[in-house]
Image (cartoon, rainbow, N blue to C red; front, side, top):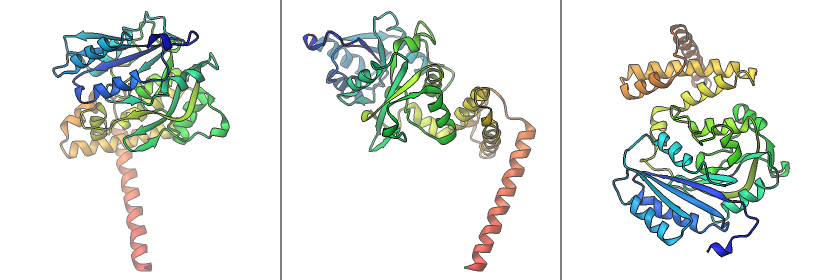
Length: 324
């Protein structure tokens, strides 16, 4: 296999963190093995799995020397594991780095198409493409006639103000190694205290680099009940994400102020609802992670706003009934 590598192909590092994903891991690694791009090295980092994940990883290491398998005997958080997995590749002479969740996979041309675009401009820090999420294609919204290289800050602004969502998690992007090392030379680039650390990482890269986009479906994202995102949906952690992102970007985009105030009021109502329903686990998570606690005045304001909205809806419905 190695003789197929083109001399001018830069090395791509692929990091695959693993914890009890035997159900999906083989499929993930097969898709890496079947990439049309040949010059890659893949580090599989098993975090104290109790199923057959580690054995599957060893099978692929024996099959192809581009796979390297590591195992940690102590279980750590998923976010710490992500940092550990990436950091193992910090000393590799790789020009690009791909994070790959063990329950997701790449289409055969993924790395080839992404590297091809990255090679056109040294100022591109990361590249995205369309993503298949179970049966639905997403991460769209760009106009193909606008080209496929964009200013990172402009894409970030459009994401915040126009709901342009072209990024879909760590597994969707191919990063320039230099862009990540400028954040942390050891590749500890994941904020382990942020459940939406993938969005925070990409925001950080977009602030300083251009972004590329390939108009092809290149990655597959699997939705299932065992992943972290299952909790994020249950606990509505998007509120935490929006509150934190808006606050962090207020200095760059002052026009976010109104949206930030609105999300704070929505957050206040949500926490009040959790308290009323005695949803202690969800309430505890938000109270632990929310960096700027909701004030009593914000809660009063949120309740007044909610009552006004409710009364307005009641009046509208009454008018509809008598004019029907």
